[in-house]
Structures are given as structure tokens and as C-alpha cells.
Length: 179
Image (tube, rainbow, N blue to C red; front, side, top):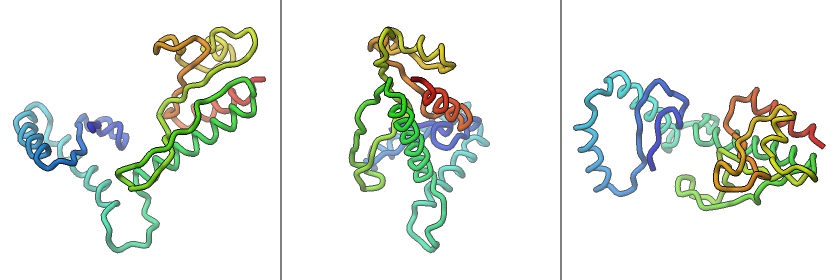
């Protein structure tokens, strides 16, 4: 599973990727490759990324503590869950839209079965006379990408769940006001 620092922690200026690898033999080969391919990547970026990953990783190590430490992945799961609950409530209030059923799966990291909270929501419009959901939402001040851009139909849109709080809150407010 490959990630970039900006996707993990919001440190977009780091410009360095990373990976979680279960197989130690594969990890060793990757380390060997990385040693040869870091030409052009600044040492500052490498040190910054190493420090960020160390802090994130250390938070999940067993040890002394009172359990009040805020851990990155726990924070992200809580926040995305809050956003999905807010979106479900807004959709239910309108009676005009629907969302796919919630999906659960086993998380190898937490060793728990958890709900999936994707970064994008597929919203379907059931309002009579509306054939293009993206255009309909645009008329209500909501920008969403039409389903046809992703091989779906125009009655669906893809909504970004990961925008800034202020933008997401406006989305929920405007969506809730549609009747």
C-alpha cells in the first residue's frame, strides 16, 4: 500500500512517499531500491518525513500513557465517521437523494471490523424531472462531479468528503435545504 506524506498527515511540502509492507523480504528489496533512487530528493524532506512517520508510529506503540494521546488514524476515522453521519442525516432530511448502504470490513491495522468511510460519496437524485444531478446541485450552489464522468449515469454525483471543514459544512447546509 503506497501513500504520500500529504495524504497521510497533510504535510504536502514534504514530497516524499512511503509504504506499508508486511513481507520483510519485499521490504528489504524496497529499501535497497530506495537507497539508489533517492537522488534528487532533498535530505530535509527525507528527515522531515522520517520524523513525521516516527511520531505517527510511536503513538501506536504500547507503552506508558493515560490513553488520552490523540492518534492520527483514530482521529481520521472519527472525523470521517462524523462527516458520513452528517451527510446521511442531510440526505435523509431531503427525501430527494440516496446514498449507498454502509459497507463494513475487517481492518488489519486495528484488528476490528469497522465501517468504511470513503473519501467520496456517491449521491443519487430521485427528484422528479431531474435528469442531471450535478446540474441540479449546481443550481443550489453545490459543486459535485457527475456520474457520467466515472462511467455511471447523470442521476448520480460524486461528492468530496475530505474538503475543509467550512466547505463541508456549507455542503451539508445547502444539501439539507433542498426539498
